[in-house]
Length: 280
Ligand code: C2E
Ligand code: MG
Ligand code: MG
Ligand code: MG
Image (tube, rainbow, N blue to C red; front, side, top):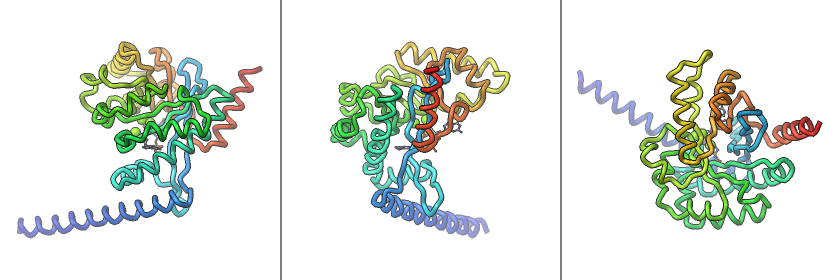
């Protein structure tokens, strides 16, 4: 009976693997089509000065509408990475985001931050691609940040690409900090400028905050400061969390409390209103 049950389990397992495989194939085909017909687009989320709440930057986040529904990047980015489509998709993201952000930088001094994958960093031509996009869109290198998740950064730390990008004035951010491993041992050796504290550390702050959560966030902020890294708190959702981060001296913050990711027109309107308010 045990053997039979095991057999049934194996069959179910095979079946779910097959279903997963065919969903991946379907997503990959959809992405190829989307690259051709231009249905990949970007949303932008403000990165604000934690002390004042004013936008200092925007993070570009890719969006894909398939049959009228938004497919989350958490679903299609991994497929793009597994199939190698991430090269073309990542380049598309950079073109779209730099093209949009060049005007925001000119008018409002806003910087742009874009997520990149390990495949892109492994491409020896990546620096040249980025520089070409900057030249064509008019976004200055100093206004561009590339975000790389902690675990990827650790395995890409040996590629010359990171050093080349930084030598050209482009900054590198370590994304989702605290979710990878070996973070402390490697941090001093990583070629980075900005540290983005993962949402999981921010989300734990209740109202009123618990001392052990506060000291954890304070320790990460001190770590960033000691390594000369600019810290950004991700996933700030409540006024209490925003206030706490401000009190702890966190320089920058991002999250639903300050603004959800939105299309370029919405962000454009927001920035104009802010600029007008500042001018009065
Ligand atoms: P990420 O770079 O860490 O981006 C932050 C994610 O958190 C975004 O999810 C954003 O919408 C979400 N978020 C922002 N504020 C809050 C908040 O207050 N609460 C909560 N619960 N969530 C918040 P999104 O847009 O679904 O993107 C997920 C991930 O997909 C990104 O995580 C990034 O790793 C990846 N991704 C997105 N666009 C690109 C891209 O163009 N290229 C690459 N390689 N990866 C991308
Ligand atoms: Mg990011
Ligand atoms: Mg993140
Ligand atoms: Mg992430």
